[in-house]
Amino acid sequence: DSGVTQTPKHLITATGQRVTLRCSPRSGDLSVYWYQQSLDQGLQFLIQYYNGEERAKGNILERFSAQQFPDLHSELNLSSLELGDSALYFCASSVVFEDGELFFGEGSRLTVL
Amino acid sequence: GENVEQHPSTLSVQEGDSAVIKCTYSDSASNYFPWYKQELGKGPQLIIDIRSNVGEKKDQRIAVTLNKTAKHFSLHITETQPEDSAVYFCAAYVLMEYGNKLVFGAGTILRVKS
Figure (cartoon, rainbow over the protein chains, first blue to last red):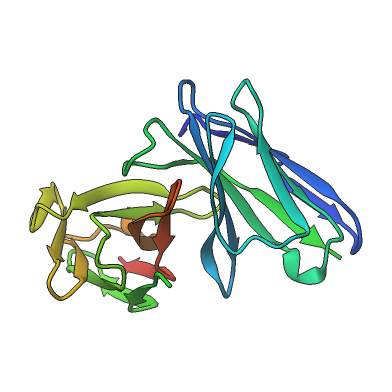
């Protein structure tokens, strides 16, 4: 158990809908990362937050947004969903801002029908 | 942009044999290279890492080597066991303007046959 909690574990929805994925980082970790894992794309970096502030962005679609709240939990919002958004979405947290181990949650599997 | 290439994409070995997975990275400023193991239905978990001031690091049956000049790093697993079967990812740390990220390779599916 990494200490990172993600909910929901599984989510099935229809095209055009909006979903919110939630992440609780390990206790004390200030940095949160979101990654998308699909079969043909591997682990793709989406966005990083540190202590409530957005710090780095990857190839995150404009339909996607995220935030980190004062209690350090984070949410990833996916809207106007398309079939191609079906993937595993991982949250990871880190105790330091610099290079160091990322602790991954078990992921949220999103299926868009 | 930053890129990490990983080979092979699949690897089958007999129990007790060694397995080697190789990665190359593009960002010469990268200085931290972790390896993650992902089992079915789980998130990636760190198994070993290496920093650019070290050429080799070993932890029991697992070792990692780094050649900064060639921008290569490799994972070596000796005396493989069935429980080593999983997907392995290499990664390189990339510093961005105000933040950072890990850039992952595409993964290697390792199958250990008993």
